[in-house]
Length: 198
Image (tube, rainbow, N blue to C red; front, side):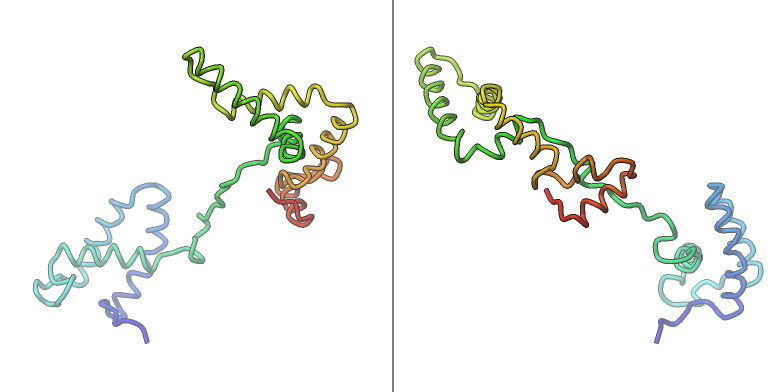
């Protein structure tokens, strides 16, 4: 059981005939003029009686507001979102990591962490002795990882490049060989179907 309507069935029918003009006024950005015309037409047929109602429609201002609300509630085009719903791309396109970043992902815990921690402790000590501020640890670490990657064997570099191309759990992008010629939406759908995750 719905709420009681403030309009009579005759008023309801008349307002419903005004809906196409309401849509046109929205497109033309002339809603203010539309409501002026609707109010004039409505009050010619059904003059406003002060204190004829109780509640929000008891004043002329309140009654005009009710008319506007009627159109907001009853003049929606097809469906809840009326075609305006847009998908937010909160993630953006995934980017492929640099080779040294993939190298760090693969070898940091086992191979690089101890070397980075030891070198950074020495760097902090040297900075203290010189009375300077030490470099931030992340920048220091990235520089060391880049250098360590440059000094690696060709076999390790090849392994890193394969992991980078296949995106070994690093990104949601499928391998380039699987996604050639596909649209952006198709690449993302393929990635989800293949189970690639960030």
